[in-house]
Image 1 (cartoon, helix red, strand yellow):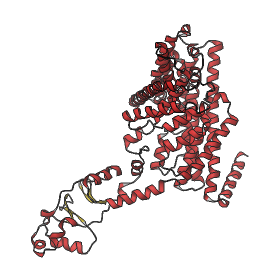
Image 2 (spheres, one colour; image 1 turned 135 degrees about the vertical axis):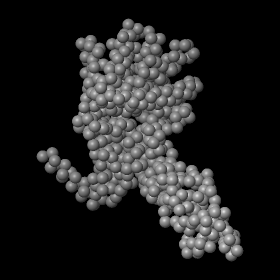
Image 3 (tube, rainbow, N blue to C red; image 1 turned 90 degrees about the vertical axis):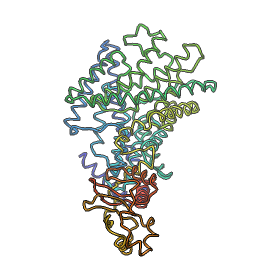
Image 4 (spheres, rainbow, N blue to C red; image 1 turned 120 degrees about the horizontal axis):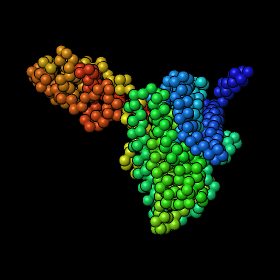
Length: 594
């Protein structure tokens, strides 16, 4: 019965595609992708919130504080079980896979990503793993967009655009922040968009936010009602907060990679590795229960009048009203968050770093402002600094200052904090960029030379295949011959460059027509000048394994229009700069979303 309704629905979409213009169908598609992404958010958020409420109930009523430590172990082991038994033994984590799909796989994302992320992240994070649901939400939304486009045979540009729609709708639904959803899709994930492409992305984001508001309980979403006024006298302290969050973001980024590499080197079975990591995580969460799950509830607590509630049901509950103990607790939690998240994901769980960045930012903002207040320098509005700190870390980790600014502005219910948000986000971004060239999402891709979305030119070059522009049919000459044969070749071909090779096809030198123009018009010199006297040593040599960015850098440094290619130690062909630029222009045109 259910399949029957799906078939009718798909026939309706096919009929609509035949009746609507291309642009109108994209608008309709953006709504449908937005609805799909929103319901994925609803499933994930509802499950995670239900488990958190259950754990809180157990702690508060039955006084079983160890339950917070047991649940993450169960969650990570269940995640590993699902990955092995249901998902073929592997699952890609992090939004970098979207960047890779756009750059290298024609925006095609596997179908299993439409459900794999929902199942695994709900088990990991829902059962207390110290990670976030937003990255799985983003991947799921992108998978909906990509597979929808494939189902209705849309072009690469439209597939990429609908991936952006799914991403924007996911973020918008997760935070009821449609503007932030649009900015995240454009600032972090899409290579290049025109103004016209904003419309379907905005439609999808608005749809996702609307569905989320209608269906989800407001308490599940991260939002703030209480807010202190902005005082411009505090601007110097916001500047210092920007510096502080920038360095904290660098600390998180580097240590997260270290934890990942540590678990990557462990030679144990998936279950043993998962149990090993989960036990360490359980101990950390037992001492610092605020590291359980996404941690959004503790963020709200920090911004309220009684942040001492964080110490309730912890080993430090006797010091609930001691401000210095609270400060140390918050500082220790802030420093440990990266290890809790790294262990959660490295040991086999699934989730992302988006929520941890907000968690870390709120704790950093609270720690900074509370420390200033306790030392007596001035009286800072702690709730404002707690919220603005989230923008600082988000901007620093993801290199997305606009997303950070507008996300926090939207979830705080207004734009009164716009000036401090801009100050903190921009400074944190500058600090992070200075020490970390790439954001967390593209670090691994950058290391492999696959995608660099912060640099459009480099990103486009990374999608080009060098082997498709190598010309292998160029005529070659022998070093012992004279110019007569070369002149004959020039007169019967349009070549302007010749490789000089021996009998084993090893490259000995290169001859450029412009360099011998004067010589070939002298019959005496043509007859008696050996080729080896006029050949030049190539200024640069290209290898088939070189990236296109490397090739373009070699053209730039050599100031030569044709460069020889060596394959397996032997001459293989030439690449012309004009062919490389033409390939770049064609790819740029195909990747620009209009």
